[in-house]
Structures are given as structure tokens and as C-alpha cells.
Image (cartoon, rainbow, N blue to C red; front, side, top):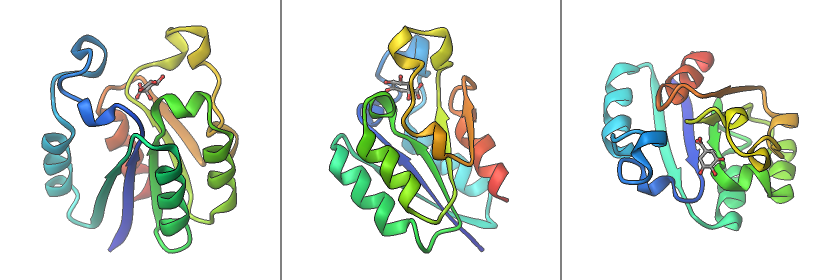
Length: 138
Ligand code: DQA
């Protein structure tokens, strides 16, 4: 049984309500239910926080024992050296995920502090980006 966790950063608790033209209209809980039943060979946990330090705490907590981390650090992707350092410090591979194609959006979204130390990056496929990341670990 693979132990995976999806870590979501700020404002991703609003999925389904937030800018549905960009992020879709499904809530993350609904999506997670679907995905958990689709991949019974993995335990897929979920953690979301709007607080940078809590995301770092979670990366440290799971980063030496889990098989894979799927990280959408949301806006902190583009600003947080602390999250970038945490991804570098831990042993569990991290796949960076974004719902939208950040390279087709504003210039400030083209920078990522996560990417240099990520195992891989999946972006632009809507919520399916998370599913592709899960598949990469199975
Ligand atoms: C995002 C892209 C980020 O630029 C943005 O700040 C988010 C969501 C995405 O999944 O597309 O909050 O990470």
C-alpha cells in the first residue's frame, strides 16, 4: 500500500467556488472521494492550509516516511523560499502540481521555488493534474 499525501496551499480550500472558469466547479472533497475510490492500492491523505509555516511543518512531518507528496503550494509556489527549502530538505519525492497552466498566466506565476527540487511537475490539466501525479507514484 503506497502512502501518498496531497498538500494544498492557500485559497485551495475554496475550490469549486473560486474563479470556476480557471479552477473548475468541483470541490476538492468531492474530487478526493472520487480519486480515493479509484486508487484503492494507495492511501491518499489530504492537507490544506492557508499558512506558509503549516505547509512547511506538514512537509517535514511526512517527508521522511511517506512514499510520495503531491504539492500544490498555490501562490506560495512563487514566493516561498521556506517551502522550496523544505522540499529540498526532505527525502520523500515531491511532485509539483498546478490546476492551471501557470506559464500561460501572469509573469509572476512563471517563477517556482518548488520546481528545482521537485521530482516532476504537472500543470494545466485542471484537477486531473493531481490524478496524473498520483499515477506517477503507482
Ligand atoms: C495554482 C496557480 C497559482 O499561481 C495560484 O496562486 C493558485 C493556484 C494552480 O493550481 O493553478 O492559487 O497553484
